[in-house]
Length: 197
Image (tube, rainbow, N blue to C red; front, top):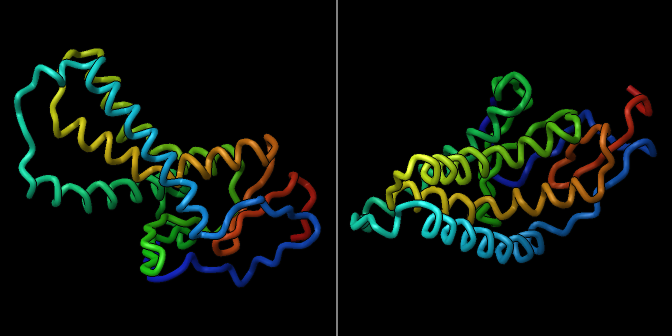
């Protein structure tokens, strides 16, 4: 795994030819503008589910402001590490890159290599399922909840706004059984067996 400061790095060994098709995706700024309302709606829905389907409304515990502030960077780091854990070799490959793009205020876990479409979607969605939905499901089934669990689950849903948008774009634009690869910010896909080398 590599660490990177700045924009999502390009791949010098990847020069998309006619076999590769570009995903229709917005610029980084436009992507954030579109993703933010998705995150707000999704986080509101998750928070509502916590309130109505778990015993959270009967829990009197409150969260200190210092705990909230400390938990935010922890949620971000764990979120990105979960992305990386779904990469080939569980993120231990030199193709796995953890980065921060200061001018866009974006943290990312990038894989600099080919992935199947389904693996690509799994990488995007796994932190949402593990941090946001599974604790909610456990709390609903066990009838045990805490404000800390609900806060982490809801905030992670908000932070996953780009993942939700990205997964939606991939699922609606890229056919099943295809290969996906990024060149910096841009995403490309091809059918198996159409490659060059």
